[in-house]
Amino acid sequence: MPKVYNWQLGREMAYSFPDARPKRQVGFVFDINRCIGCQTCTMACKSTWTFSRGQEHMWWNNVATKPFGGYPQHWDVKLLEKLGPQAWRSGVYAGRTIFENDKGGLREEPLGYLPQAPEWRFPNMYEDTATATSAQGLAQPIHSAFFFYLQRICNHCTYPGCLAACPRQSIYKRPEDGIVLVDQARCRGYQECVAGCPYKKSLFNTHTKTAEKCIACYPRVEQGTIPRCMAACVGHIRLAGWVSRPEAAREDNPIDYLVHVRKVALPLYPQFGTEPNLYYIPPRWVPRPYLTQMFGPGVEHAIKARTDPDPQLFAVLKLFGSTTRRIESYRFSGKSIKGIGAGSEAAVELPIEEPIFIRPFNDKAFAAYRFNEP
Ligand code: SF4
Ligand code: SF4
Image 1 (cartoon, rainbow, N blue to C red):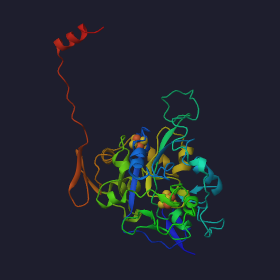
Image 2 (cartoon, rainbow, N blue to C red):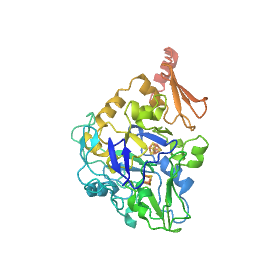
Image 3 (cartoon, rainbow, N blue to C red):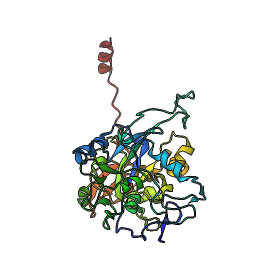
Image 4 (cartoon, protein in one colour):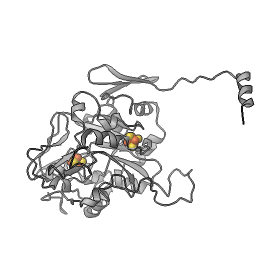
């Protein structure tokens, strides 16, 4: 039985195939604190990839309002219930993953379920719906009433549930960049990948009768640019690049810096065991037990670092949404940060402090303004 090392769990786990990491792995960081729920990313993806017949219900990118919303409805709650107890002990996951049986051995197929058609109808059900009305007022650092936006695409997992579940071996992970794709010619539409993806990001085309999923905009990745949803993001919450294993992390790679060096960005539901390659900076105002269930035991540390960032972390956070080119490394001088693309040329340079101009007081202009007041 193959055993693989999942660094997000801090331990080995059973998986259907031996470890075969790609040469490079696409990785993303989303800062939940900045998202305004405008769905520009959702429509940028829809108008690029899923506007055809059979894709009407299909959203490769969606932004849900948590805690109640989900696409498909209640996808995470349903799987968390099936998974059973999910304890962490000193940073090591002590529960079972979707691949493991009660004794830690390999399950025949990943733990999952196939959602019914009505569950796919709403990409953002319960939009802007908070848990309750708060009597504490808005100044509380953690709100007893809360909601937040959860931006979701395929995680291009290191150990994909969709791939493990497919009886036709139609799903593959590209060795050059770790992007997970469905071979449409091999797919027979059994929908095992839809059941086996714990994040429910493998979807069924009702017209072609084959599975489809987010392709990380691989034609753009091949050109050194970032996916459409990330280029279009109004809130500048998204950063795309390469992510390394912890032991190979480079401090000058912004994704590695956020994930491994500063540990400010965390995987979504790491306990599922797929080692997702999309990381989130958790929202500051949400109760910690809820966030810990969602992002694992690093939540408190991540929020503390994000709330009061030092100059270098502040500078790296400025790179989000600053260019449509993929930033592979950065140089921080103390006064500015350069984002470097493929090759060694700067894709963007940003000042750390914006210059401030104080206008001299102008008596006449002030008098004219007062005179015109209603
Ligand atoms: S998120 Fe789901 S569809 Fe995407 S690679 Fe992971 S298991 Fe597969
Ligand atoms: S475009 Fe950006 S800010 Fe708007 S909903 Fe999407 S992730 Fe959030």
